[in-house]
Length: 195
Image (tube, rainbow, N blue to C red; front, side, top):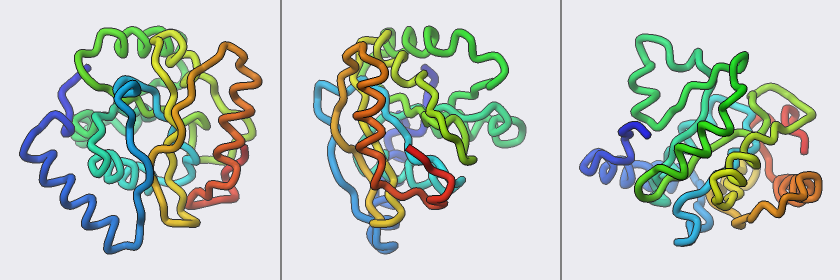
């Protein structure tokens, strides 16, 4: 995977301090920690209802000492900000041509040296949607890594990492359990989030 802000020692340290300070003075709390066995994992980013989700997610990642990569729509990576978005850990996704995205992502996770957390929004959009995409599930399954139920709860002003979830192969049952965790969590625009 490409070099990111999370691999830049001095900047990483400064942004960690800035993130913790900013979250604290704005009334946000951080919950959870990444267990050692989940150093390589897929993080669900839900609910995803606002552009504000990215800054909060990055601040939480710095605060929790994560090494994240995140998937975003390809239009975010156009000039002049494409390089910055990649440096922030972004991976452009072309929604029309995502046929091998799962296999490519799983392979990148298997081959990554050291910790790596791949953030995937299951809704695939900030807009209202009834169905979650299952790519995050199959990436984790093919890479042989757990899924971490990450969240940004605007209702309680709490963000962080919830339980670690091991895919069982029972997609419907696993999705029901994952969605049950997210049911009480409120996005910035709660009317756009359905579990």
